[in-house]
Image (tube, rainbow, N blue to C red; front, side, top):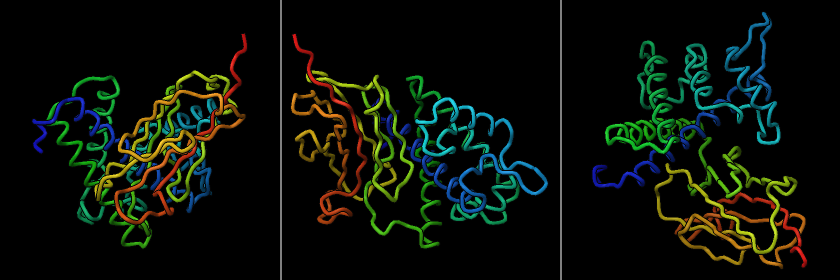
Length: 292
C-alpha cells in the first residue's frame, strides 16, 4: 500500500516500531561483540595503555544512568540511549575492526569512510525518533526513509547471523517491548530465553481487587512471515489478535507475586514452545481488598 494512503497515526506507529527494533539489534550486536572481547563491563574497559574502549562522554552517560536506576537495567548496555549506541557502533575503529561485517550485504566491503554515511543515516533516524516521541506528525518522505533504512540494516544483521550460523533455529515472532499502565517499559534483552520482570517489590505498582492494569506488547516488526496472536496468561484470556490487555483485578488474583504471562504465537501449525512462540512474564503484588 502506498504510504500516502496510510493514516498518520498508523504511519507513526510503524516508523516508531521499526526504529525501536533497529535499536534492539544495535544493542544486541554491541553487547555480544564487546562482551566476548572484553567481558560484561566493556563500557569501562581499558587496554594495556590505560586507554578506554568507549569515549568518555558516552561512558559517563551510561554509567550515570545505570547508577541512578540499577534495578531498571540488567546490563550496562541497557542504560545506553540511542545516541550512545550510534556513537559506539559508528566509531571508526569499532566499525572497521568489529561491526563492518554486519553491513556487508548493503555496503561495499571497501567503501571509503563508511562510518560517515552510517552515522548520517542513524542520526537522521534518531532525529525522526525524537519527533515521533513528542507526538509530532511524520512526513511521507521521512517515513519512506525510516522504513527502507531500518529494513536494510536489520536484514543485513540477519544475513550476517545466517552466514555465521547464529540465526534462529525457529523463525517465529518475538516480543521486543512491553509497556504497562504504571509507566514501566520493558525492552527485550535476551532473545534466547523467556524473560521475567518482577514489579512485585515496587510499592508504586501494587494492585488491589477492582484496580485496572493495562499491558501492551510489541513484536519485532521485521517478522513478516504470517499473522500472530497474543495471550495474557493468568487472566483467563485466550489467544486473539489484540496486543493490548485491559484487566480488572479480581479477589482470586490476590497473592504476593501474581504472574501475567505475555505470550505470542504465529498462525502456523507449529510453535517453538509447544503452544506458543515467545513469552515474557511480569509479576505484580496484589494486595487484599480494603475492608470497610
